[in-house]
Length: 443
Picture: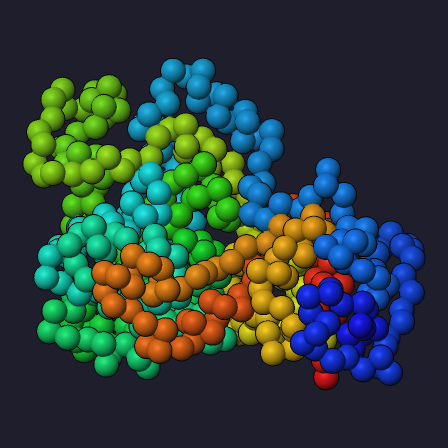
């Protein structure tokens, strides 16, 4: 049986879907000319999952989220190793200083992960047992786990369906006398609507923490992501716009919060080994039960060369984003909304939503079909409230977060990297078009 595009459907789908062969569309392959990338127009051929030839060979698989590392990063790491100082030291200090300069932040603390950054920010603000923290349902669990680790209770709020960001209009109804903070996540590189969020926080005397894991380069109406609330937390996980292998950063305008987080990041000690080595205090005191959350020089050595190229890489990802916007029109996808003219998108994740009503299979089948074309994709995210631990521990249900549930079922993250060529983008478009047309539902 053929679908509306004249393509033969899998046997297991033929008994439940009727297709009109009169609507068959036949196209021929566009040749590669004048150095332009070839976007296949032969969309009626079978996708690889159904026996067709894959868009890319297995030896040239397009890996989702691969870091962009080169000789500068290798040389920087080797130099660090040869220095015989690979722990917390001068390179971490330099990374903190240069990151703070880029963000316009008075204070920056490099740590071992973005999760550690959030935990430190919460702890430094005194969040603990008996408190509640407002947070989005649409995020990764690493945003919510630190709330639990402090002993506080996460109170989830639904997202906006188009931006995936927390819906400010739903925050106030979730506030109770126990609420102490709002944790806002800038999803995919687009800042939350911070104006109303900050207004609520001021009126209700709440602290604000920004999860900027996706938003290093982002701004909201001229204000840098991470500097609008009390603390901004960043991640340098391998898939992020800058990677240190794993790592994070806390930035703030508050000197007391910074000093408190710094002490807590290294066992609650008053002095680290590097400061003692370079002539600082010969000893130390432990003044709190802190954590082992510091960054190492080895990690900072990997990140420093990337920080120098951050704007160049941002422009390259912006180009890939624009190409997707133009070339994916007409597919059964809700494309990401345009960026606000007075704000800056970090272009971290390109996340169309599948129009499942126009497809005869779910997302997992689409992902499997793209994998057969040797195109890697991601899912950002399965909403927090749908994970077994959070359902069991806090009684979260889908009906409380309909937008997050809608997004979580349909979201798909396409490769987005400064290393991608126009042909790489064309291959993603060809593969996604071929797969969507093959699995198109009957009209």
